[in-house]
Image (cartoon, rainbow, N blue to C red; front, side):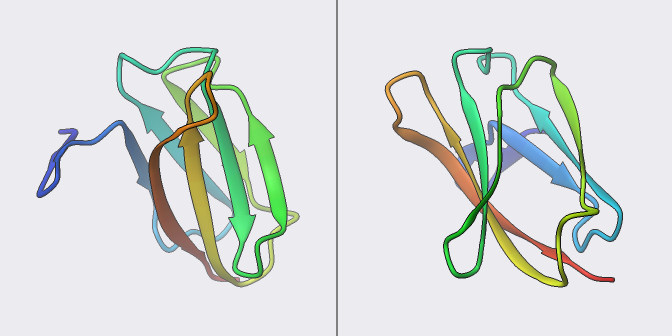
Length: 89
């Protein structure tokens, strides 16, 4: 279920668009040395967290309506995967 056109996906996220929360699901190769960053459309960092679990629920109470970009970075800071999701309220 992590397969897409580009091959293996490390991150699944849903629902998209999201209202109250969004769930990030990580592949087996993701561990606590990785960092999940979420930015708003003007590049302000909204959230930074470590994937302590295979599945993380991010509450969107601090998020306004709009498009957000996430980056999954490895221990060296390289972007492993990125994507965008929409918040509708």
